[in-house]
Length: 97
Image (cartoon, rainbow, N blue to C red; front, side, top):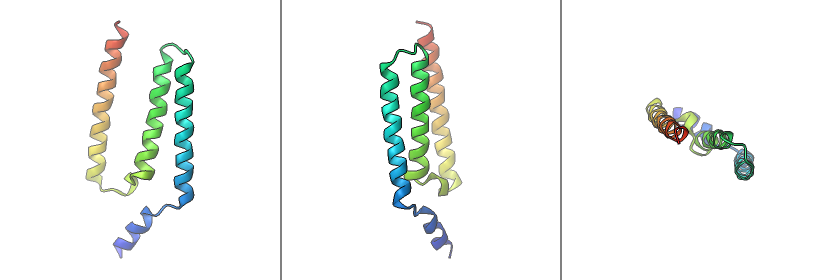
């Protein structure tokens, strides 16, 4: 019985996938547009925020992260933590140039 319930949670309709795909294309276009406009130091921050939103959409919709075990979610959180540490170190070095 649990298998049927878990399997039914992974079945998204095609419309959800198409909407998310269109959102990803839109965010990609926005990222390209922002890269062409000079916002100063905010350009990189805007691009990273858009990339974070796109990552969230891919992880939750296409990779079905919402229904995974807690162990897998912990690994994702650890990876995101190290990514944030890397960005902090990068920007601290970048700001000193």
